[in-house]
Image 1 (spheres, helix red, strand yellow):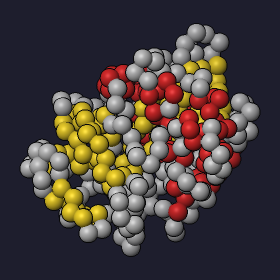
Image 2 (spheres, rainbow, N blue to C red):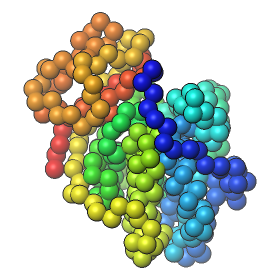
Image 3 (cartoon, rainbow, N blue to C red):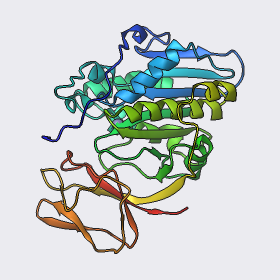
Image 4 (cartoon, rainbow, N blue to C red):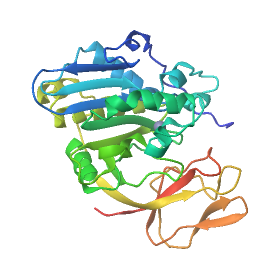
Length: 317
Ligand SMILES: [Zn+2]
């Protein structure tokens, strides 16, 4: 990338949270001693996504303790995060592979050994106890924040209860492997467990830290961890425009060994009026929108074969 975005955020020191109290490095659980859900806020699933670490560090420093149930604060791919270098900021997304594509049971119980499969195996027993998960992310392109709520109604309802950000995207995930938010009961429509993945904006724009901060506060209120007074005292942007829901029909998965070539400088949420409109090229292959009024979600300029170039969707309300 020669058009490197400005790096407006700086990584915070998460070393004080290494020992935690769960036996798993960088995982800390606070137990209210009262009945209630086990709620988790996870940062740095991707190591170059700084906003989650900043917001979770703030929560620790506020000494937030759950009013009911349990609260776990975690830093998923801490090794990747600790390798963050502002001079090469894309390099620290992961160490060996994307930890948010290893949550298929076949992978978790298979024999592939990477930094990320080993870390996922280490986290898995704790994750099995989580009822409500918020996984904090950010994006490569400068794009408004969005909540990825998964394919099921329960995810959509939780996203609507949280109330921010404005865009809620209902999707199945990626061909390249299962995300944490789709693991186990989170991805089972019959389970009361639920999970959200928030994309807070571009990785290094200051706004992404504000979005992460506010979304965590609203999520913790909705899940009964903190009360409305705490949220009102600390939220940075109180106004919440009416949410818009986009149903994703599927990702376009890249076949060529090179990044996708885009026809225009799409940044996400563009609505392409006519089905069959060419939006770019996968190697030599022309790629067009599958239907009218198609919304482009998270167009990616970096990934190549096997990864999602974009998701196609429709506004539903
Ligand atoms: Zn991410």
